[in-house]
Image (tube, rainbow, N blue to C red; front, side, top):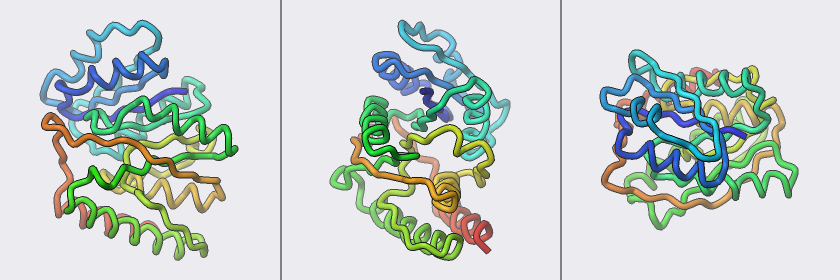
Length: 225
């Protein structure tokens, strides 16, 4: 198993992510998406005890979707059977990957998506998250003729069987979680959900704004029509 970790200006957080991955013995592919700080330097200087760490460095910021695409291609090239995704800001905790893996194996699933504990989510994010869930439910219905409601489609923590990702389109920027979910359901993948921890700490910066939310909506609608 390997964790693909997109990171943009995460010099304050990336070591915490890698330290926890090292503790639970899950390899990491960090995709530094054009950071202007010392993110790559922090990754290069980290000394793991139990895992392998691979670094991909983009010369400019290409967006989250491209970062995940590059990390996934590298994971497939290296032959990993399971690919986890977790953001580099340490809002989501790597230790929860083990919960997802346990459920995947016990229930013979193809993928497990994290569901953030909503009591810990700021109210504005609850609203945008609910609307995103409705949008994806509509997109799934149109694209697959099946009704499927995901409780937290924007959550950045997921575990997916690698074979299902070989021909996946990753969309653009922040539409990636939505676009990938729609395609997995179209493939008939068995997707489960598991509650996970989330911490909105002061060192985590969100780059999602109203324009990018509109871009996500446009990208999802363009994909299904």
